Structure formats: C-alpha cells, structure tokens
Image (tube, rainbow, N blue to C red; front, side, top):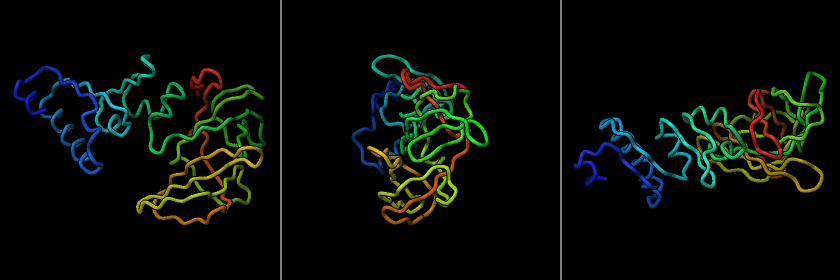
Length: 217
C-alpha cells in the first residue's frame, strides 16, 4: 500500500488485504484504510468476503454470487432492503435467520405461520402461499411465553459482555429449526428454557420459496 501511495495513483485495487490479520489489527487497519481513502480522495475497489469490512468501508457495495451481480447499493440500502435471500444472508452479524412459512389469516390481520408459532406479515401475499421468512437476530424481542404467538427453546447462550446471543430451536414436530437472537446487555437464560418471541411486521422479510427473490412490501 505504501509503494502504491507514493506513485499517486488514480485508483486503488484491494483484494482481501486484511484476511491474514488478527481480529484487533483488522479493526485498526479498517480505520486506517477508511482515513486513507478520505484523505486521498481516490476511487477504491475493495474485494472482500467479510461483510463487516463491506459495511464499514464501502460507499457502494456490489454483491456477487457465482459471477453474477445480485444487488448494487449503499450498505444500509442492501441491509434494509435486500433484493433476495442471498444478499439478505450475506449482510449482518450474526446472519439473518431463515424459516419456512405459510401465509394465513389471523385474528388481527395477515400472518405467516412458521415453526414455533406465527408472525405478523406486512408484505402482500396470497393466503395459503408458501414463502421463506427472514428475521434479523437483533429484531427479535424476548417476551413471556404466555400469550406469545411464537415460542423458542434456548439451547445455548453466548455472553459477550455488551450483548447476548441466544441460540434457540423453534418447532415441536420433526427436525427443529435453529435461530439466533441478539439482545443488548447481559441477559441470562437456562438451557431448554422456553421463551416467547415478538417482532414488528416491518421487520419480517419475505422471500419467494423457489427463486429467493424478495417479496415487495
């Protein structure tokens, strides 16, 4: 990088420059590269498989899948409005949860039935239609299981100090589906404890079960 800078190039090409660094140095170098780009004002093409690097460094992200461009946009555009299941699963840490779903009519409007219960649905879909549901770990709230429309069973808890990851199974019949819940602070749950789940309708992502394309709200 230093040899390139002294030549005052019009464009920088980076191919996973931080992949062999340890976690602490990787964070430090992300900041250094961002400051370098701001100071020099040169176009930079940065190839990475690390979605954290993509989210923190890019003005525009181009998501490739097997040589095909899946979506182009700002980091938050892709995070908030992924064009398909692949993009939705690439951005976010932990990754988005995916569950099979079936559209139905609930007491207070359209819902989607998923393993472990049902969730509110904002996207237009036909009753009885089979879709795939995406839920980001940070959008799931833990509530009392009494009266909750969806429930999960805690299998493992990771305490990171400032946040807590819950690895849970949903669904009582057949093979349970595994989901991850991300909650702020230090929260404690017992193994096999049953918890209730709550989520806003606008935070439920829906994808075509065959093509993986996002269903428009």
